[in-house]
Image 1 (tube, one colour):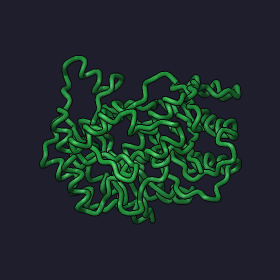
Image 2 (cartoon, one colour; image 1 turned 45 degrees about the vertical axis):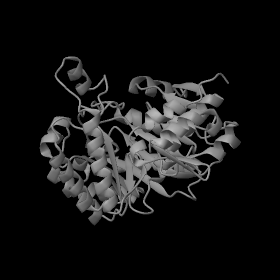
Image 3 (spheres, helix red, strand yellow; image 1 turned 120 degrees about the horizontal axis):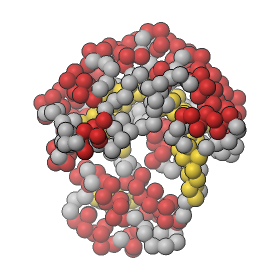
Length: 378
């Protein structure tokens, strides 16, 4: 079974940290939504006969979509794909969009899971990030979603924000736990060059939080959430038992997925596609019945490295037998000295032919994965 991602490239305003593709101008919104539906039809054969297990509306701000726009995209997908085993339909939402009426429309359209971008429970931090909502309106939106019948909700939190001290961060975690969301995603603030924060950094107006402080805040988050019954099943994602995000888990478990819309990515096990990150070029190409994407054929090394990178981010870890079977790659033999070192340092463990990172090791997951990559020619 496969996943389908639809990118909605519109936002009411730009968050200072966001590097995803979006536009604050919605003048061509009608044409772009029509093009999304048309691309779904043009891409009908990409996944072969695989049934769609999950749909995910990301962005941008998908909660800006009207009921008619959202229903159109779901119905176009349903018309050409097998929805028999559809288990999760997620929509990312900003709190200010979640009125009682909008929540009712989302339920009626078929959304089963909300991902609400709360980001912080500190008004000063929300202003610094250039979010539209306040802490109180974020909490109110969450409760309205509950009242509307949404029983599967994720909330996003950002840590390592300049000026966010440990007591404030502990308060953020406590308020998130009090909401009792099924899922919490938490990300360290990263400074990307094309963002407002990135431009401030080049001018010396912005100083990022130290790696040590970011690690301390992450450790606090893990401790509090585990005590509250959440499991860190992926480095940045925590869930109540049985409430893991099915769509994102598909990415980490090497499942196929189709991405629709400008900047969307697709993967079928053998190659990747990357749609152009430009609304005008995207619409014009789709109108000509051409999908504007770059193509990457994955080499054996690419596949090995992808599996190592994604699997080590999860609680399930890297299946060393699977590496041998799929890619004829013996990680235990090829990286024995390095593996012995990280196990001795308490960064990793190997049990039953599975390599997993410890809590300490997960703080260094990307570095460890890159050190394990297969770099020899195919």
